[in-house]
Amino acid sequence: MRTKIEHFLSGLNTKVDVLCFVDVDNIDRNNPFESIYQMIEDNGGFDIEIIYYSNAIDFLAKNDPSLIESLEIASELGYDVQNLNSEILASLLASQLARDEFYELESEILDFFEKLEEEEKIGKNPSIGQFVYDVYYCKRRKVQAISGKLYFIGSEHEPVYRDEFIFPLPKK
Image (tube, rainbow, N blue to C red):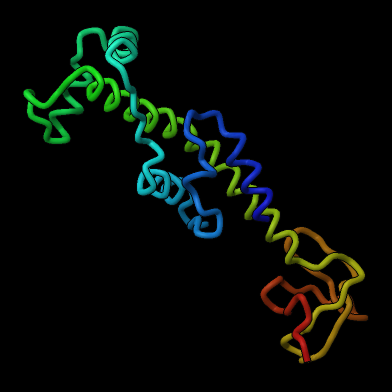
């Protein structure tokens, strides 16, 4: 499972090297996108630094020629105008763009974890011919057939739902 998640995260179309900032074992399966985003944020994964005046000016000219967006970000973060320069503005803007770009991956990430959850559920359900522990009769019974959410177990092919038996069988 871990390998599948790592493979998925490494293949995301983002400038952030997600695996460097995310602990796969600590992803909250109930809220995977926010969990991953927060780990990247907490570990500085969105902090893009643009160094050298010429690089900063080029970046700002392409992405924010009026400086409105980068100055707004600086203001929101409490920067004083006298402490700003092109490198700081470019770095702040690049970091915000990395965050925005990552947010565009939200549905892709959520879809992946939903499919992963479905695969796990399927793996926890028995197939025809396997034995389950019937909690009503307190004995081991064989799955004879499956129709949707109904399992037909035992020699009488009694129909039961998944929560009426234990699978895999409990260890003695």
